[in-house]
Length: 498
Image 1: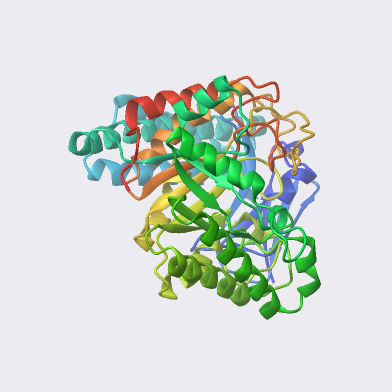
Image 2 (image 1 turned 30 degrees about the horizontal axis):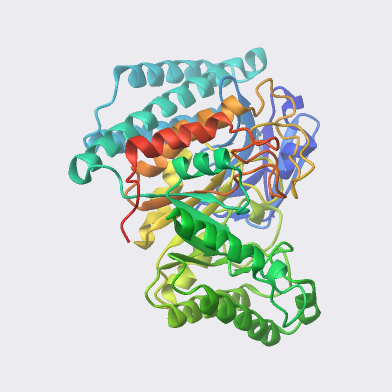
């Protein structure tokens, strides 16, 4: 059994909630199943393999809030590492590597980036000499400067990459898609939706349509589809099968140990949905939550079979329209505390290798410290993930949501953890807007990213993640919605090509 130990300075930074989101990964960035605990002032991670790896932990940095930061690759040793120092080392390493790659590719880097890198290295050198001095303040300052530099570098890349693409194509032919939870929106909200998005995602859940086996109720979905057609906005429908408590009917759990019966029942629902809405849907969302085993006791192989069957059936019934599959939590944080045979990347790789003509992959990342959410990441960390997933050569869509408050949300199915409870910077509408303004252009700048889906539109409707919508329960638009509308008006074609 391998063990890695870290001195935490100050130790109160690591709360029980932080431990729930801490994990260790190998060279391929796949998290290992590990036991994580705090022993006095030491963070201890134990796993079955003694291999070198990097540790990821939610960590507060002034001016950036709580982000999931990673150490560099560390070898196992008896002497404990100093956690703030190693987080700074890992962050600076990512920054310098990305800076070198983009400069080699022709990026014109502002002098301010080089100045911040130099300052971050200076503070890091001081932290190396005295790693525990002043509660690791030098390491913390090094982290702040490195993240400042990474933020500026990512913004520079996004600006120049988008400008280059627009010189060739005019505005970007990207999808900017919003969740349409209901058709009964007031005129003002409808106008704001249409101003921000050029595609409407109409969620459809097997649980809601077929609550009783064999009896379908399409009325709610019919109204939303007709609203889209009346407004002239393109439509994405799905997920046709979502393998969690929200997506599966209660009666399906009677077949928890009978995969073939579940496959047959899912097939009947998929066929009914595609036959009903064929010709009215522009993009089929085939399956979601399949790589994260949240419901039913099926093996990874069985869940892969189910997803592949849904894709093939959709393609047979509506060969003219593209389809996609969602991969949940693409960094695979859940693997650190829950056993699974396949990481998110390996799950997608198995689908691609199955030769079922998968047309697109959606990376579903709901940034929050909630169960089922994706830990907030820096811009460079997000860029590295997208570059890795672009290796499949398939179009990528990115599903995102960002909270606008840390308060309780009675309509949310998930509840925010307290990983950032000691942070003076909390989620707010201004922070949500800042994330949209910084991260959406970065996503659009990546050639492999064909579209962005904002996973929650209205906080007034039942939803998964707290305060992650763009419209308040009182019907008021949040600043992030106006930011998305401005980005669409500036960068994106009003109607993307088919």
